[in-house]
Every structure is written in structure tokens, then in C-alpha cells.
Length: 193
Image (tube, rainbow, N blue to C red; front, top):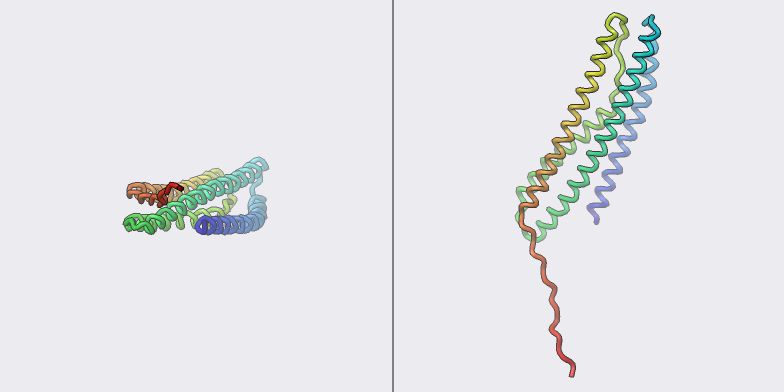
């Protein structure tokens, strides 16, 4: 029960950190939009200007949505790892050899921390054009989209690695024989005379 409370506190802390990062991103977005408006003022074609603004907003929206989804996945993986750690502690208390599982728990914990940090970093990123040269506008937008795509793909892979590591821990734990339940001592019934 204490472990679950501890996990809930960790989850709440991670969510608060992500909310704080999102607030920072909103502030950065406001600044970047102003800078982008100034840069886009150089572009003469109104349609191109509107298209670039629309693409930037879409990329930002997509980044927020995907990082939110991956953050939920990381939180779920963290909960599973906490339950597995609780079972490892129980088995250790029952006298089982769980040393190989403990090593895998360390690997899974490291992978999960790496995934959490990557989600925080990705949530803080803002995708806007660095320069608004009308001649290279199409290529710049294409590169911006590709950059977001590559970043999200790398983040997804880190979350997959964390999930696989936690899965491996659970499988290793399942291979250890469970402790035999202790039968309760029942007093012998003495007939009443």
C-alpha cells in the first residue's frame, strides 16, 4: 500500500512537471509567434504566409498531442514497474533468489527515467521556421515537418525500449517459483462432553 502511494506521488509529480513544461512552451510559443510574424512579413504572397502559419500551428498541436499520449504511456509503464518491484520485494521477503530480477529492474528503471526525460524535453520543443526566405520556403517547411517526425519517432522508440525492459522484468519474475502459501494452523476440535 505504501508503494502504491509512493507511485501515485511520483506520477503526480511527473504530471506537474509536464504541466509546468507545457506552460513554458506556451510562453515560448507566444514569443516565437511574434518572431515568426516579423519574419513572415518579408514574404509577399499572402497565401504562402497563411500556409506557413497554419503548418506551424499544426506542428505545435501535433507535438503537444503526441507528447501527451507518450507521457500517459510512460506513466502507465511506471505503474507496472512499481507493481513488479512490489512483487520482487515480497518474493525476497519469502526467501526467493531474485538477484537476476533486481538487475533487470535497474535496467528498466534507467530506461524509464530516460524516456521520462525525453518526453519532458520533447514537450518543451517549439517548431517554427528559422528564416522565411520566399525562395526556400517550401524546403524549409518540409525540413521542419521532417524534424518533428524524426523527434517523435525517436521518442516513441525510447518509450518502446522502456516498455520492453519492464516486460522483461515481469517475465523474469514470473519464471521464479512463487512462495508456497503457509497453511493456517487450525486448532483441533475437542468434543464437548
